[in-house]
Image 1: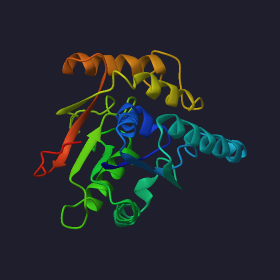
Image 2: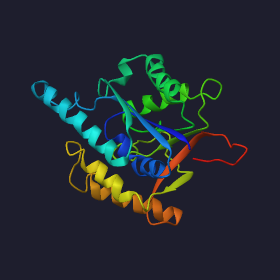
Image 3: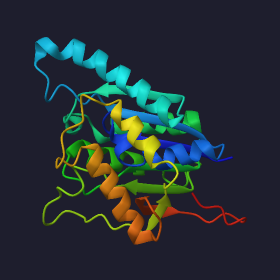
Image 4: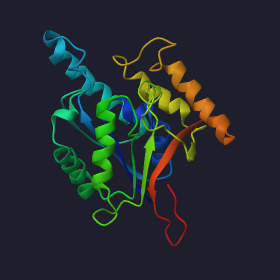
Amino acid sequence: MTRVLVVAAHPDDEVIGPGGTLAKHVRAGDTVAALILAEGKTSRADDACLPESMRRSLDETSAALSELGVASWRRLDLRDNQLDSYPLLTLARHVSDAVEEFSPQVVYTHHSGDLNIDHELTARATMIACRPHVSPVRWLLSFSTLSATEAGYAGRPVFQPSVYSDISDTLDTKLAAMSHYSSELRDFPHPRSLQALRSQAELFGAAAGVAAAEAFSVIRGTWSAGGQTP
């Protein structure tokens, strides 16, 4: 059994990026947890609508992660699209607390080259928290997040997949989980749509020779004596 943690910037990132892989871990008997740093609403919702938006968002997260089979999760609800207003050390300590508590061997987080500043800082904080001499983490992988990764501009690090996870059997579960985030979904051809998520999974699948896949870049990996991989 492997202990798996996903560290995401906003509610729905944990589904858009590695949702099918998380469901696959759960089906394999692994223990999966999620940490979500920011609340995802204050940069878009009117102040008068914010309390209701936050209540709805919490319900959506609960339903989406339940769909994936992830029972252990935490939202810190830091300010949306303002993670750069917090010291990086503060963010890293939040992630370190989760790593210390949950003791994961595998951690998934954002690609540091994403256009969204919260994604970038979540990735940096996670890399700090998962240093090999201070954590039990043996595999640290970054995922692509539609509407943020492909929006990166010239000069930003490019997302380069090096590992593909076959989610042919869990793609429908991923899409069902994302359907719970109705306040975040948009109509196709917006990248944050169910059709775009399916298309991306099929494109990654074609690259890997399977029907559907999620793609990851290895930030750091350590082979165990038994050859264990994520």
